Image 1 (tube, rainbow, N blue to C red):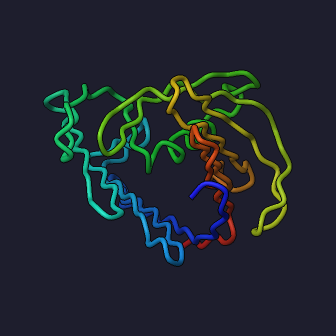
Image 2: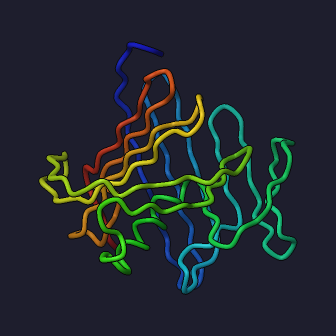
Length: 196
């Protein structure tokens, strides 16, 4: 609700099966319930290739990436979208961008823009991220030097997205801040990192 502050816990689980992946983000808050996003797909030379994306809160909606048919379909009965090579979903887009930066940091100089076709539970849109500079963050996890990218809203109801990547952690996203058009925002900050 606008003007109220809530504290929530979020956990991102990432499983790499060699040529496949399973990524799940769960956010839970007292009295508000939980929301989860899950993406499964293939891993290849270009990174992640989602095959199924699920967004679940009160209801569950899914997007199916049908590369062989050149289409993305939605369980919400919204119109299908064209499949585009490199398409990501809302669970993988930040991880994929971090992987791209890690593969060639010099290609992501200040001011660089990266367009990523991003699929949600009901539609697909091109998100344009811009590299805006380095920033030293004090996080619950500790002090980290980061590279910051932003996605500016292009339409009245678009979200503003800010992501901070830590080079010392392989360009993992260590802070995400997503601001709605009405000013409400979610600010996720790294508190712990477990590796198998």
